[in-house]
Image (cartoon, rainbow, N blue to C red):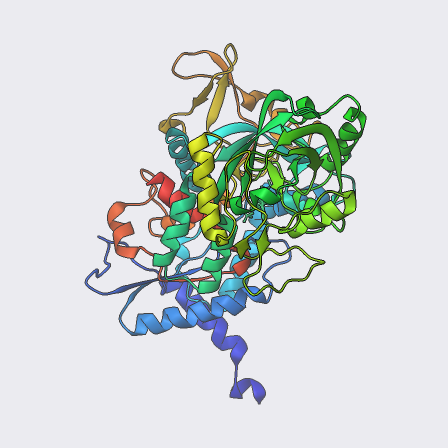
Length: 572
Ligand code: ANZ
C-alpha cells in the first residue's frame, strides 16, 4: 500500500534516467543554440575534493541551495550555468594512496565516480557535459599555461625559503600537517629548513587585492578576513648604528620597522629575530654559545608557536649595543623569537612601556621601561603597557635636537618620521602581512611545472606552449624519497630530457604545484570546458562572467578565494 501511495524509489530513478538521457540541464554553448538575448545566471558551487569517504552532509547542504536557485532562475527565463567538477590533486589523495598502497590515479578516479553517482542520485540539476577535473591533462595544460604567463611577467620565481622538514618521515610537510611542532602523522619532530622553492609574487598585488575588495559584491565577513590577512600596516623604517659598550661605532646599521615612531624616546633595547643575517656579526664572543644554542631551539618552532602559542617570551643578549638616534643613549641588542624574520625588517625597537610583548620581556630580563605616552584622560594601569595614542612626554633631547613633548601621538609619529628622513636614517614605510605564496610541493600528486634546467649551465628554460600539457609520469613508487628530494626524481626517464630549441641535455623540475593551483581558475574553465586552443573563449567569458552566486566554505577565504583574485589580476 505504502509503495503505491508514494513510490519514491521509482519516481526518482525514473526521472534521473530521463534527465540523464535527455541532458535536460545541459546549457548550450554560444553559437550552438544558446539564446544570448536572455539574461544569464552563473551559479557555482565550491569545487569538491573527492575523498574516499564519499559526500559528507555539508556537501548537499550548499548544493541544495544552489540547485533550488538554479531551477528558479531557469523558470524565470535565465540561461543558467550550473556546473560541477573536481579539485582532485593534492595531499589527501596522496596520503590515502600511500596508506592503502593504491596509486592516487586509481583512488582519485574511484572517488570521483562515487561522488558523481551520489550527486546524481540526489537529483541535482548540474550540467554534467561541463564536468572537469584538475587532474585531467586537458585541464592542467591550462594550469601550466597560466604558470608560464606568471613566469613571463616575473610573478613566479625561485628562492631559498624555510620549509617544514620532518627528518623522521624524510619529507617536507605543509603547515596544516604540522601540529604543535610535530608531524600530524607519526608525531615526529619537525624543523624549519631552508630549501629552494617556487614562489608566486602575490605581494606585488597586495595593494590592489586590498583596495579592490571595496568593489566586490561579497559577504563583508569574507572581505574582512582577506583584509586582515593582507594586513596593511603604515609606519617607518629606522636605522640604528651598532656600537660597542663605550659607544664606538661598529660600522653596522640595524634597520627596524615600527608603526609607532612617536615612541622612539621609549625604545630601551632592540631585538632581532634569531634568523637575522646580522646576528652572527652582532654576537660577542662571550655571548656566542648562548646565542647559538638559542637560535637552534628557535629553528625548531613554527611561527605560530613563536607568537600566539608562546606562553612565555624568551631571549638572549647578543653582546652588542646600538645608539638610539633620538636620545643618544646606548641600548642593548637582544635576540628573541617573538620577533619574526619574515615580517618588516626582522628587527624591532622595543618600547616596553607601550607594547605588551616588549613589556613582558623587559620585566622578565630587567630592562628599563620608560613611559613616553600619557593617556589623554590620565588614567592607565601602571602594571601594564599603555598601547593607545596619547600625549607625548619624556620625549626631548638636546643631543639630537628632537623635541616632541606635548604632541599628540599621531602628530609626533609624523614629526619623527620626517626628522629621520631629513637626517637620512629612516623613511616612511608601508608593510603587509601577506607573504609571497610558496608554490611548490615535494610531492607526486600535483601538476608538474612546465620548466626544464639545462645540464651544462643549470639555466631554467620554460617549455613552449605547444609542449603542454606536460603530463605527470606514471610512477609505481610515489612515496617520499626520505631525503627531501621530490618523488618525481624517481621517474628517471621522465626527468631526463632535451631542450627542443638547442638540443642540449636537460632535466625536468621535480616538485609539483600545490592543490590550490587547479582551484584558482576553474570558474573560468566551466564557461568553455572543452576548448583545446585557449583557456576560455573571450565571447563566452564576457557572456557568462562574472560568477553570480558562489557557495563555498569560509575556510577558503584566504586560500583559493584570495589566490584566484591574484591569478586573475596577474594573468590577464
Ligand atoms: C615600536 C613600537 C612601540 C611598536 C609601540 C608597537 C607599539 P603591525 O601593526 O603588526 O605591523 N614588529 C615589527 N616587526 C616585527 C617582527 N618582525 N616581529 C614581531 N614584531 C614586529 O605591528 C608593527 C609593530 O610590531 C612594530 O611597531 C614593532 O613594534 C613590531 F608602542 O615598534 B613597534
